[in-house]
Length: 227
Image (tube, rainbow, N blue to C red; front, top):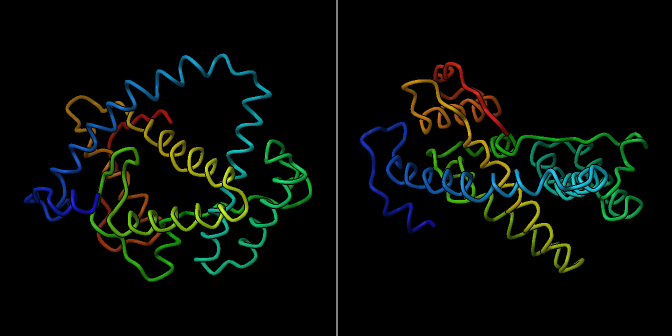
């Protein structure tokens, strides 16, 4: 992936130097959403019983607690990291692998944090805007950090259980990416460039977490999203 990005034609726009590569990957992701992700959700989702869907949602949220431990830790929020670790431990055991949220009734609220903000707290500034296949909008610095984080997370979990490590990678990393890619179903207003709309929205998201390092782009008019 690094080689592909390095060989991508550079756009004349300094604000989006990888635009040619990004637009190609945007088209790949949109095709994936339109022809794979959405049909699967639309045809399988209605057949899943509500209790099963709730349990799977809880299990998914429980696996993401591992990421919340890291995010809270990077932001120096020791209490948040401890709470996320405790939630994962309790829900993974008493909650039957996370199918039931036992921690919240016990007073351990979820401490969700922004990954982009966590990186900024370490002193890292966002890199150039980047669109990756099967992942979507990110930036060059976050892409490297996220790849390293996933590798370390899966490796660490493998010492506990290879099944848990595999489930984390498939459900959280791949499943989470597929869910995020559904954002490509944004319907642009007449004459709008959907790629540019999502690029500006991502920049606003990063600036919200990191603080404005440059003038914020104007909010795209009449944007409609289906997550």
